[in-house]
Image (tube, rainbow, N blue to C red; front, top):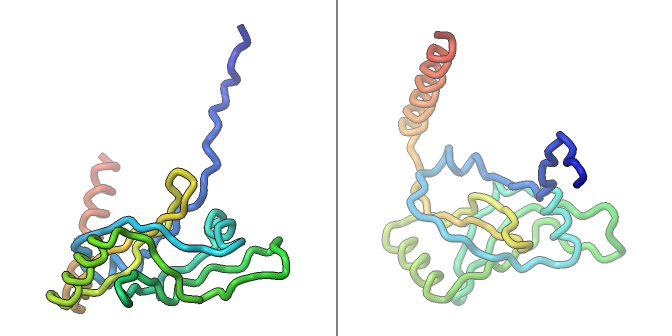
Length: 159
């Protein structure tokens, strides 16, 4: 029987694209995993982690969920056809989930924002969240909490 080499290979998976700004600006109340309708080489660009979702937001139009201002960089090795970088893209979710999301957003005055893009079973997925905007004092408080946790970890490590 052949010996296995001592090196453990890390799986070379796709990059997860996070919207860290959303977690700073908003209080996330609920999340929903949706599929994405993509064209051509957009999938390869997402797989390489070449997208920006900090400015993106979602809306429900005619019972369909759409994401606006999602910037997916064009794939450099693609052919002549390259879709627009910041085009509107449709998100795939069950009709009852979209209705529930729309109802929550309208009743409570919440925003629908994209939180992350990742791959699951070979398909591009987007995590969408309903969120309430934070006030400046909330942001300062969350920064203060983060700083105290960091100091506490530093002190425990030094012991």
